[in-house]
Length: 98
Image 1: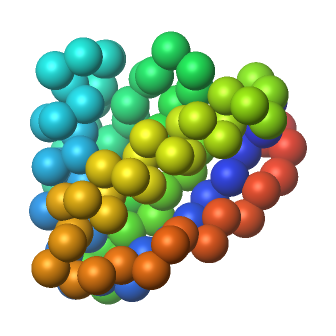
Image 2: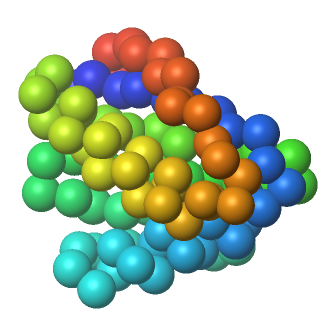
């Protein structure tokens, strides 16, 4: 299983986490609280963790192609929802998940 993580400095982390999870819940299985969310896509899984200063996004998938697609879906929606902050492209750190 491959894994990639990106952190976004924002005071709106909980807001974006909840907005993303509510949006994705229209089509996929999602569970979330104000500080933690899990989104199960067909191609992988997104895990979101928020605190007062950031939003950390972790994507997991069985192969590179599906991981890339999972990251792309999460990032494109986050950038759209956080348009007032003009987020830079996310910097993903990739590893093999245990």
